[in-house]
Image 1 (cartoon, rainbow, N blue to C red):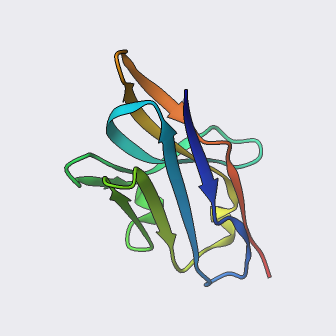
Image 2 (cartoon, one colour; image 1 turned 45 degrees about the vertical axis):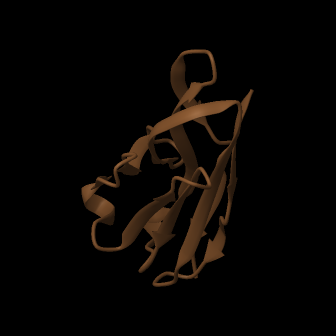
Image 3 (cartoon, rainbow, N blue to C red; image 1 turned 180 degrees about the vertical axis):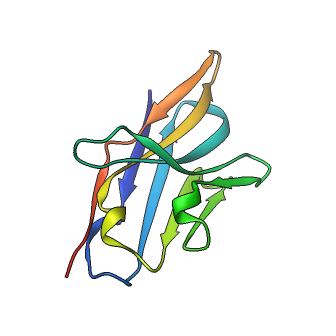
Length: 120
């Protein structure tokens, strides 16, 4: 079994910062792409940021210059540093990872989601 466990959500004022972390554990042979999606009430889930195993990053236009994604391949973790937060960043944030398990095939796994609320 593979698990992705997130941490770091919460309530922050506009202009503030939060750091989300996600750790993958279990029967892991290899992790390819990792990243974060978010879903606000009444909206579709959208990609926020992604990072390849080689470190290439990709960001949604709405977060470029404010969010930074990073990963630690040795620890199987991915993090999202969120600065200059805005009310429109309020959403449930989900980490994901494309994981190949030992002796098996690969697929996308998801974290449980963590709430980020930006409000004064």
